[in-house]
Image (cartoon, rainbow, N blue to C red; front, side, top):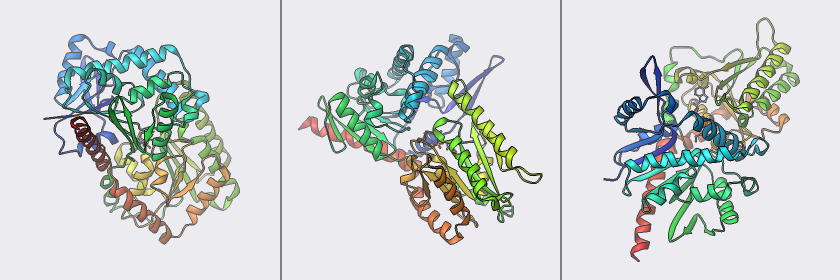
Length: 470
Ligand code: ADQ
């Protein structure tokens, strides 16, 4: 019986070691939730880095951790400290991440980063090959593993391989800047099914493949060496019920209109998320509409991320200075205009903020999808006082959440007016807009996303079988 094999940079289990003792903590992100709802596709196994540097473990300890993890269907790929620095913090987060989000001025190309990227992808491949066969369905995730589909194909020519990119795929004009562009594209083209969140990313990918590798496409199909490849959009959803059922938990707490009303923002502290732009617009709003002083509060929750990369540390400083300046300028004894939290919140706390928010302010400069926007809208289900979502057109989610107030994050005055419009929007209008968006995101959940991807991968296998027997 074929199995479903997932490969991502991180395993859904985090391994820690303290005083010689191992700890295993599940970190169930969106992908793991989607995969867990795939009940009809046989056994599922997962490959990824368990979050601990290889040097922290002896050979015996690695064996012990591997045995424990394999009971959870997880197979660890142990990355060394140098691979974590040059592969993960280097090529992944200082070369690819900024470039694919259109921050080309921040993208650094360093030959040692590239070598580490290749050798790390090879390490994932070597681990995988020990455990899988050509009967399995292999699903590779994200920008850290773009060379992997081709590497697996070399070892298992008949394997069914899917690849999904969670970040934007940039236009050819950006992609052409990358010194290793053709190696990366050929790496991805080792897959049979290539998925993106949005049609725009599909279009960009096909155009780069044509202009850089010379491969023509027919709609969403490509033919390489007698192998047909499908490229398509699979917009990732959320576990809708988990967020839609939030209000039940707060039933006993009277949630009349909050005083002051809450403008909520939640993201990783990343330069792609447009946090300084958001603060600048909020400051401008306070200056233009003084009648809202004391009546609104921006609650900004930023999760620490990639703190070892310089740009993230300096961004944090900028944000903290901005928050301090705005609070210094406008605070009174009874009112602080911004509450800023620099930490990750457990689901219970995060959901309380989603529930209490009056306006969701999500302003990324680029974002593959942005699941926070969908979670916020789902959390409005069954709530008496509906909130309004303000969403950047640069987030993949904007095409499914078109009833939100869609803004250009570079247009400060537009954000200012959007905040005013959101605060003044009548209840019926809020409810009408949210209902339409909830309808859409409740149908296209993360479970459906995973199912459609895997079913498409299986269809391609059948199709290829037919082509071969013709
Ligand atoms: P991210 O850039 O991390 O993901 P996003 O999709 O918005 O962006 O968030 C992922 C998850 O993080 C959400 O489920 C959210 O609840 C959680 N989260 C955010 N802030 C939190 C906090 N303070 N505390 C606890 N949890 C928090 C990347 C891409 C996105 C794409 C996803 C999925 O950059 O564009 O949507 O992958 O493909």
